[in-house]
Length: 367
Image (cartoon, rainbow, N blue to C red; front, side, top):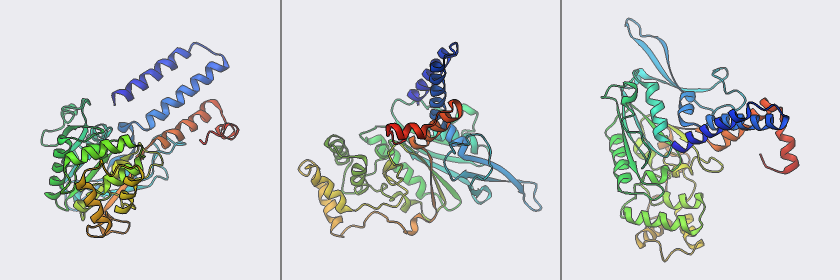
């Protein structure tokens, strides 16, 4: 978040430095900077949550002097051609808050604290909330619950942990998330906040694999040349929550998953290793990746043995499409680089009349 804000500040300074010039070239520079600023703003975690999540009063209970409120979650990502506040033709998931006694907020990632900050300032004081999120060391989100005069009984624990190599703090925080889920019931609405880095920040190796095994595997995978899909395939098959396994703990409770992507293609099963998304990879795929990069002699034996048992059908596969555990979960992609790109292109066309389609064809930029 600190780097994000510094980039925005730098863009504003560049824009201001161009304001005294009127040449066509400087105008084009200014339009480009304006467009870049809009693109960055469109994927800022706080902006995204405020745009996606709403609380609305809908009616009164019969014979009761009590307002009824609903939580509305916009299903589609930010529209690059209509980034104003209009709700026309928008699609929403709607949750009647009278059905729930509280909201449990969990998750992890580099943008997750900012997401949680925005979220709690929307849902408070309409419904009690609690939870825990794992965020990287160095982010300064201490006491953010109290920063907007939110009552102390509504608390999100900020658990600092390591990225990109997981650590004990991350493990403790993830176990606490599972504990909170298991201690909740169907009167609790669960909201999971996922962003880039969530895979390392929410470690929970499946027994008999240890945290040290997991750290070694992550280190090897990051250095061997494997791409993010391949890394996450192995991560999913040695984790108790990745690859859709978190959904096992959540079902049959209602759950909303708000996701900010940092991966090319925005595949939900890849972002943070897809803890609430069906997994289409297999144990055999994981083994094939290990052989592909010739790392079988460096991967811990406990991991190799576990993957081999899985490939023989002696251990259950990760949950697949159609599994009932996903029936109460709604996964929603709210932000990504692709969305930012579309906003930038739209703004360039709006401000400068620049035909990006023609430029794209001429230079094969694959915009």
